Image (spheres, rainbow, N blue to C red):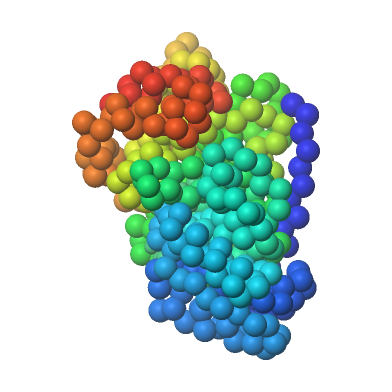
Length: 389
Ligand code: NZQ
Ligand code: ZN
């Protein structure tokens, strides 16, 4: 196991009706003037926004609101949010929604305290300070509720970049699984896919002897395979939603990624797709993951075989372990199809003629080194091959 430090001081309030405590938590974490930040309207339609406002009012907290965050959040609204925070003297941002609302809130939080362009943080500048953030999540997916990361799309050029910094970790996160019951089935499935992807990105490691984190990841993957189909069948299954919600947080706050190298190839390759075609991040991952894994399998057949046996219940073929490894990748692919995810470029709305451009931006934009991947180092030609797969 590699050396590591781990500090993840988010306070979690989990369970039914916990959103009614939002005001109390904002106060506890020092907020007095709040920006409520949310998406395209699901929180208005569900009545959640009204309940949140009432809980702020009960604590005599002043607030302003800024809605309209699009999935794959855009830089334009971030600039608006930064101006609003300065004008209104905001000291706390409460994101209500999914990864997009949270990531946009994180960008505003960092930008509001910075005299330069907030986009500098998405081009490599370290985030050292940000306004305090709290979140109320309405979809189990991105894991931004417990992570120090934020992903934003730059409108000039439509490309996605990520930043990370401890100052961006939410002070508190409210997780009421029943808030996810209004999700369209497709979004639920995209979330399930993203959570599984966050687990694979950590599972694919070159670090030896990482039994504890291997086993934690496998447990979370098994949970997703077990609970995912339950919510697809019965969207009102609170217990299954609860298990998925906590698994989604655990999959990405890095408790099971410490002490080991991580991959992130599928995410780097996917981010170009959701930026260019505005598809859901999880849907893009469903297409990308099986292709990346088959392409990289030979690098460490036994790692894929281990996942196949322990997670997907495949029989180990000791004579030809690559058969086992492939069976595991195929089981993943079939699982994603079974929950309604797209299976190829065409279904995603992606175009063959864009492959060169996508691969170039993935290798020279996002990571900027000409290569990507923490498990196998891939160059632009490799990435083109994967998009073709
Ligand atoms: O905008 P509204 O009206 O709220 O509708 C949203 C949106 O259309 C809807 N929705 C969310 N909760 C709902 C609901 N509809 C009905 N009922 C509810 N309870 O679902 C749609 C998707 O929302 P979004 O926030 O975009 O989903 P998600 O949480 O999957 O976030 C995706 C974004 O997170 C980034 C992705 O790249 C993408 O931009 N990621 C962020 C990460 C991080 N910060 O750590 C890591 C991830 O790997 C990921 O890259
Ligand atoms: Zn993701």
